[in-house]
Structure formats: structure tokens, C-alpha cells
Image (cartoon, rainbow, N blue to C red):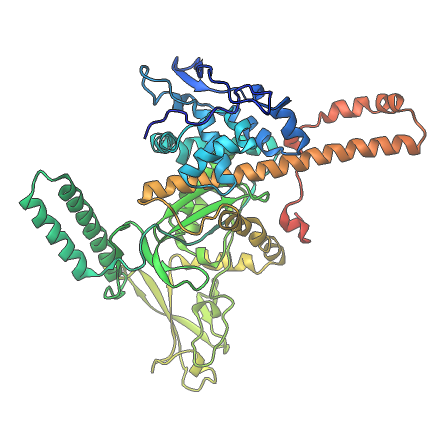
Length: 553
């Protein structure tokens, strides 16, 4: 589709409400990038008028400050990696800053469709300020997203988040992490089992042999082979863990997505698991995407957060789903204090159930376990590592036959046995930490820190289902949503910062009237103090949502 502008640009002068649009339009403004030397189509937001009123004045009078904050933060970024991806010759493309500003501002408003973004660039006044008045069509917007995929998912996200943290003065010494399940862009009914996967691969191979030059047959053969490869990998992983693979299914249209249970009782569907790390101001400092695991991405997210904040966090708050050896080792290697409860601790006796291993207390000095009934379990054997098991020690009691709690402890004839692995020492240390009142008080802030992030993504941005296919495309889509969320948080925090300054000046004025001091004299007395403060945004921190609910920092 042609990218020729079909509607007049909003910066075309038109002061007469009853007159028509000027027939002759000016040529697009071109700007030469000093870093790359490439010329780009740009705009001038300050030259846009709404009748006789400048767009800037109109937005200020309307109290619409989000566009100013977004434009200011985008101006601080380094656009050289974006500019270098364009050829030095040919038609001048739109400036990357304005294009990405259009996309992020639209996602902030819950607009995801490329055609809706095209329409928004022409009609939304705040968007006109961010984009400078350019009006690209949906094809240009889509090509821009695909072209700059590498920068959007890592480099630009880290740079933009770093600027937001600096502008808002947000502290990232305490992080909270969580993940969720979001449905993939595929049908619920096109789920294939092993027989269907093999039959599809055979049919695609036969079709390609009959028509070797057919491009569609080649693409179908590649897709079916990739689908079969992923299915066999997951099948082998299930068998290695001792699970049945009879119920294993895979999506024919989105094979990289994992068929798993969705949130809020919506059944099973092909989906992905996005994960985030957020600070106390709910600014996301790291994100990751995995088809099925939330624990595997903790270490990469901690490293990404360290790149953004220039140092590792001091505390990490995770829910019971992250009580995993890999997560514990990742935090120990980076000297991060982990607060994460065990999902099975403290153990609760259920009718007809058995006590969990965490209900048995280990004594390091005597190298024994004590069961809930008070009996002592001693070391009876040491087992080395085998191809199917890890090395471990076995503990057992001398007599379990007369125990009153035997029905809730074991069904074995010889009594209850406890296997102690090398990782159990770290797990028990973490359980001991979580018993302290201070640790439980700090951990209680986790929900208020990270849960609103996914609420914002689902409620405000409408991320109930991904709209792109493939792991790379979905990660790119998630990156845009996370950056839009961080920009929304920056707008809210900067607005609160402005109100804080306004309240301080108002308090000074009231104090001057109360003490009958002239305003010039009053400000002169405090000029030296104000000069020392300098109103540095980076030194001011606001109460987080958790502190607002009564939790102390």
C-alpha cells in the first residue's frame, strides 16, 4: 500500500474555520542526523496550531502533561543504533524518535493495531506533540518495528528505563519478581498430538517432493519440521523427568508456545510466560519471556537489572513458585538477599495426606532429623550419583510402628525415610530466614510492588492475548508493552513530583503570611537553604503503594 499522505498534516496552517484546506502543501521537513549523516523526515510540534492557538498552549491549558514527559524522555535517548540501520540513499525515512514515540504513546493508551496507530497520529493531540505531526501509514509503522527488533528488546529498553529511574529518582535496591501466563495468538482447537505431528511432517515432505519449486510447499515443510522437532524435545524432557507424554500436545500454528493452564480458570491453551522485576515504584527494571518456565529467566533478569541500575539489587522478593535451587544459586552468586517462602512450608497436615519433608527439623551438630512426633531420624546410608538420581543421604527412625502420627507420615512398612540432598542446606537456610518477623514484614510488600504491573498490562493496555506469532515477535511485543508501562509510571511520578514542589511553595507562602514576613524577605532568609537543596529529582523518593498501605520501608 502506498505511504503517500492521504490526510493533511496537522501542522498545515489553517486559521479560517470556514475556509478549505490549503491546496499547496509544503514539502516534508528533512533533518540530517549529525551522527550518521542520514536525512530523516521530521516534524515540529511547536509549529502546530489549533486555529489561532498553539498545540503546546492547548495541551498545557487542558492539563495534558503525559505527552510532554514522554517527548522529553525520548529526546534523551541515543538514536544512533536506529539511524545506522537505514541505507544512505533513497527516500528519506521518518525519524526513529518520532516513530517510536508514536508506537509507545499508542500502547500507553491501549492502542495496538497498526491501522489504529496510523489513525491516532492524525487525530490525537497528545500524539501529535510526541510525533511532531508526522502521519506515517500502518505499513511504515510495521516495517519500523520489525527493522529495529534487536534494539527494542534490549538496548533501548535498558536506556529508556535508566533515564526514567534517573528522572524520577526511583530506588531499585529492593526488587520484586513475578510471572504470569498470557495466551498465544493461535487457535484453541488446532492442537496436535504425536500422530498428527508426524502425519503433518510426512505430508509436507511428500508435497515438497512433488513440487520442489513451490514456495508455499517449502515453507510448510520448514514449519512442520520445526513443529516436530519441538514436540520431540518436549517429549524427551517429560520422559526424562518420569512424566507421561501421552497428553502432550502442540499448536500447529504457534509451535513455540507451550500448552498449559491459563489464569482465572480459563482452561488450557498454547501460551507464553512473561516475567518481570519491578522496584518499589513499580518501574520494571528487567523482563523476560519463556514458553513454560519462570525460574530459568531469573538469572538473566538479575543481570539485565544490574545493567540498568549499574549495580545489583540488595533484596529480591519472590513468591513460593520460585523456591528453586537455580534461583537460590543465582542470588547467592550475585550477593542478593532472597526472600522467598517454601510453598510446602510450614507443612499442614491434611486428612489422608502425608507430612512434607519440611516438617522434619534438621540438626546440623548431630546430623539427625526430628519428626513431628518427636522421634529422631539418624543417618543409615549414603547413596552416590547415578544416571537417574543425584547423590544423597538417607535418614530413618528406629521405630515407627507405635507412632500415633504414622497415618499422616508414611505408608511404608519400614517407616518414614528422609533423603537429604546437597541443596537442602541452602533451602533450610532460606526457610530459617523466612521465619524472622522482619523478613515476613518486608516480604508482605511483594504483592503491592509487582502485582499491579500485570494489572496495568492487562487492564490499561489490554494484554489478554499476544498478537504476534513466534518467540522473537512475542518478546518484541512484550518489550513495547513494558516500555509503555514504564513511561506511564514516569508520567505519574513526575506529576507527583511537580505537585510536591507546588505544595512546598504554597506552604512557604502560607508560613510567610502567618509570621507576617514579607515574601521577598522570607525567601531571602531561606535562599541559602533552597540553594543547598537544589530540588534534585534524584534525591526525592515518594511512598510506594505498599508503604501507603501501612508498610514501613
